[in-house]
Length: 344
Ligand code: UFG
Image (cartoon, rainbow, N blue to C red; front, side, top):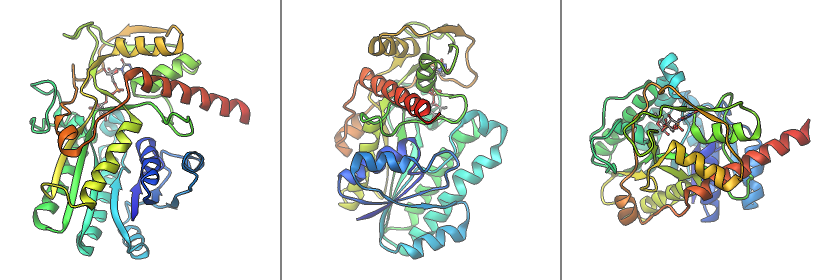
């Protein structure tokens, strides 16, 4: 079974490629390398012993997408990761986000619809819920007006897919709404490689601890939570990657209850920013340099998943603890440093 993984050199994409290979899928990775490096293929090969097929392509061009599918008529499923994901940048340059995140999606769906029997897994985000009225968040919680163009592209993406499913009976799709993916492969062969200053909490913590950043700013400690800092549901990227394989198998085995389904992917447990820092200090034995800073605009107070649907319907459950995820993130940061020192 040949599977196309767009954005397969990225953080979640690369981990998913490894899990697909472990299940015997033949993977074709397409990436334009705008936010990822071809050397990720070495990491994947080091883990699985198998180098996936790779094509460096820009899927925002319709004829590129058409040519790709003509060349690979035997693709039996698509997992679509490629997208821009920096919330702040999306506010600065909304059209870039609509172009990157919507155009490729539409062109791929056109090909799948034309060919028939399309199976499609979409990277969505818990950002579609905004600040949910009820916690934990169930899949049927209302989708709130997007806080950023990035968030809007995820909502629009889901709607486009739902509309296609509505008219195309032999097209099946699943949107996976990720909570906060963190960590790295336990082998430390692949992990997250943020370009520039990390926007997300965990890479900022590990980069501070390794000496790349002076201190972590904790954005707000006056929220109505257990310790005043925001609550999120941090999920190990390997757990998240496995869910993609399970979702694809569900479509391949025609086990889906509807031709469009949505699942939350989280652990079901919320952790505060200070709890994440404590976890890091526990697993590393280090003291993290941090200070309390003003709130970051756009942050919701708390978000964590109700995982019952994913557990019972999809038959998937996150296995790793926060400490395990933090340990893998820290091991990865140390490995990145070793590589840089070795190369210089
Ligand atoms: N945080 C800090 N300091 C930092 C970075 C983050 O205190 O330097 C805090 C944030 O305020 C937040 C928590 O750590 O409370 C997590 O922040 P992240 O940036 O790691 O993740 P978000 O919850 O903001 O990200 C989620 C999704 C994204 C989505 C975003 C916006 O993972 O896909 O919400 O809705 F875009």
